[in-house]
Image 1 (spheres, one colour):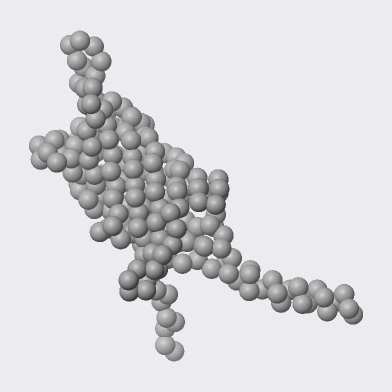
Image 2 (cartoon, one colour):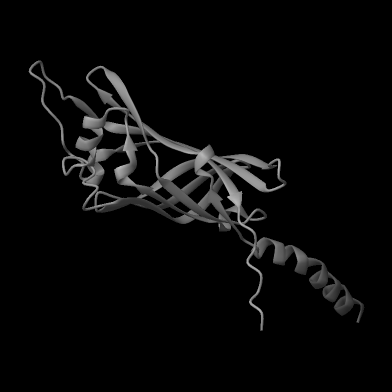
Length: 204
């Protein structure tokens, strides 16, 4: 009997922890305090740009981060390099073909912890009509309350993608050899996210 009572007590103590571990919260990107930027080689220098229209939906499990997931969507036509004619070229069929492929999406499939604040997030990146599975290095920057008492969190991603893997091939050969543009694109994403309040149960 004593053994049974001990087992029952352990089960009761474990229940709150199990419930906490299973709890996920919905967080969304705050676009006013987030950015998606990139750099690519042009001749001997680098040109930088950004996408101005994007959103992230994160199902976050604070007690068990590897049980979290993320969906990230970029509107390809929102590309901005500070040069109107260049941006129109980037939206054209030579590059992103934004009219045909209006969105760039990332859908996570797994999360692996490298350390307390460092994670490998694996998922499917779809761009220019091509889907490739990649792993993104994600740094967690912590949680804070904003001045209104709302929960905020921060994440950073710094990675390099080869544009040819997604069929973005346009380039121009140079008379002296080499090409006008590089193939590797440096991508930096800085996200400040806000926790969405839980939806109250519908009235019966």
